Amino acid sequence: MEHTERRRDIKQLTREDLARALSDLKQPAFRTKQLISWLYEKHAHSFDEMTNLPAALREKLAERYTLNIPAEVARQVSKDGSRKYLLELADGVTVETVGMPRRNKLSVCISTQAGCGMGCAFCATGMGGFVRSLTSGEMYDQVMHVAEDFGTRPTSVVFMGQGEPFANYRETLAALRWLNAEDGAGIGARHLTVSTCGVIPGIRAFAEEPEQFTLAISLHSAIQETRNKLMPGVKKYTLLRLREALDQYIEKTGRRPTYEFALIGGVNDTNPEMDALVDFCAGTLAHVNIIQLNRVKNSLLEPSTPEKAAELVRRLNAHGVEATIRNSRGNDIDAACGQLKQRVINPHNA
Ligand code: SAH
Ligand code: SF4
Image (cartoon, rainbow, N blue to C red; front, side):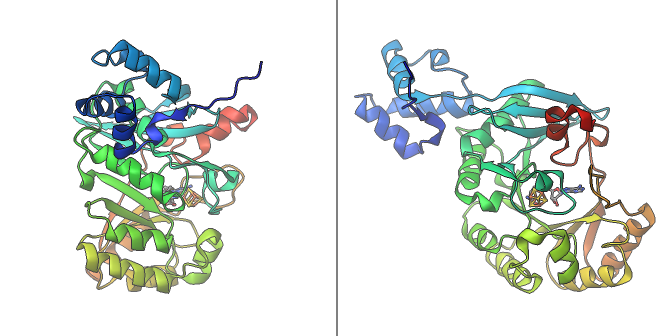
């Protein structure tokens, strides 16, 4: 007989929902604390592991709720120690996650959606289209997967894997809060960074959140025409409106957003492009991260040169704008988002 799954994903319940669910099960209030600690802090893989909960309660929870843990279906290890995982979620959808160790630190890069609907011309994820948004639990689980694999606590998380976090705002925020929580992963808000391609309603909402989360903006060009071509999904959020939203963000939060700028040869490394970027940044609180484009299969776009990168830094600095050239980590394992997945799904791409 066909069995229809009626159980809810327990990580879709808020703190209040969990408290209510346990009180419905006639449990004393302290059980909520215990359950949250198992789900998030200890990251139990099954209800059976929750040994300080009565066996009868564990059974009832298992009857009513699912506790999903993603399964690792592929991994690549870089010479620099980074590990990139392809994780399969409960419904078979797969996403990428990266762990980047450095000395006694562990930084994790997570996906917020399977695929992405924004269609950026330089992005492997964008080329593959949109599959679905992830739940906050699925984001949290990615971090814990990396933590468990490295056997150490993560010190920072960047929401820079596949997907556009602000096209999945509510779940992204819930994940940020569990990652930040003392009874969750306990990672300081400043060490939790969300990267957006420039979804303005998301930036405006983010400015109102009380936590000091960090914001990164994928800029890639400060000339509207170029940006429209590179990032067609955010055409309607013009640079002018983006500037206004960022100014409001800075005013509200007092925090400095980071601008991501991937240098693409002949596209955004020209004189007018550099001038436009300087204009966009000068006089505002900002830090520009300059990276070289990671080559993507089936794309004609090429990285720029180290000389151009150095020149851009010089020009920005000359106008009082801080800029850093970042080396993309895990280059040898296809660091650009979307590439591991493509390769696993279509081995002929390799
Ligand atoms: N959707 C969000 C976050 C995920 S993308 C965003 O766009 O910001 C994470 C970062 O990788 C973004 O800055 C994105 O522009 C960048 N990126 C995507 N493809 C790239 C490539 N081929 N080379 C360099 N950076 C790339
Ligand atoms: Fe989506 Fe970001 Fe890739 Fe653009 S760069 S397609 S917004 S994941």
